[in-house]
Amino acid sequence: MVPQTPPPGCQWSIGIYEGVSPFALQPPDKRTNPILCPCDVSDGQARLVADPFGVQYEGKHYLFFEAEVKTETGYKGKIAVASSENGDTWQYEKVVLDEPFHLSYPYVFIRENQFYLIPESRQSRQIRLYRAVGFPFHWELDTILLKGKRFADNSLFFYDDIWWLFTDSGNSTLRLYFSHHLKGPYKQHRKSPIRKKDPHYARPAGRVVLYQNDPIRFAQDAFPIYGSKVWGFKITTLTTKAYQEEAVAAPVLDASGSGWNSHGMHTVDATQLPDGSWRAYVDGYGSSNVSV
Image 1 (cartoon, rainbow, N blue to C red):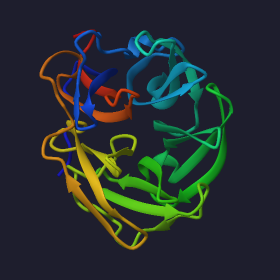
Image 2 (cartoon, one colour):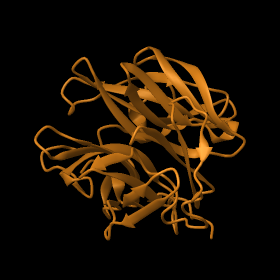
Image 3 (tube, rainbow, N blue to C red):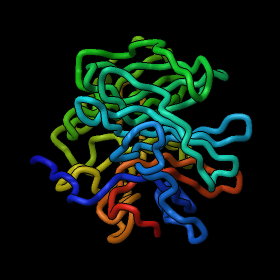
């Protein structure tokens, strides 16, 4: 099964959803989506912005994402950042990470007052951990966590004093690794691959979050069209020897049928707010230059 490509005339953009749980997210009534489009990229000619991941620092919001920018040899993914004082109005800043190979899915997080970023860099056949040496604009390679496979959409989280790492190969194989230390060494779980030959539920689709004390992973549905929707899974058992998960019945994100995300969505970065509600950065592809 080979996923179809998005229809002509569509582009990837980034928006914000809200809801009462990470499984019940909707576009808010009082916000205009998308918040970022390819036309916002001012330091290159971009044809998409996608894979949003957000953090806060010193009272300001920062959003990292893939910007696929035109080069002399074609389009290539780079990591860019936008900022916001209030979380509603966003200002594109610039590309902050550029390598000879394609980059996407900038999984950014903070640990012991240090910012780290793990972009997808499957063309290099590595999982690369970058460290901020001048947040948010300056990053340097810190550690190569794994190498030898075409690792995609690497999603790292800390749970029960262990670092767990989901990664995909070929849109259909979900692997799980773990380590007692952030920088490794990482060992493949005995139940890995968690999903095999499964284009619907294998590829990671955003940050792993805790909900009602259970880790929640998101998966992008890559069939019949790449990036068609996002599913949620509650991880009910997670030890170095055992793994079990339960699927949420309805998609977490799905095509709206019109506007900027008319044809599909494939990434969610959800955060619980102090009042208990949830807010998420999401992406979608649909008609160009349309706000809804």
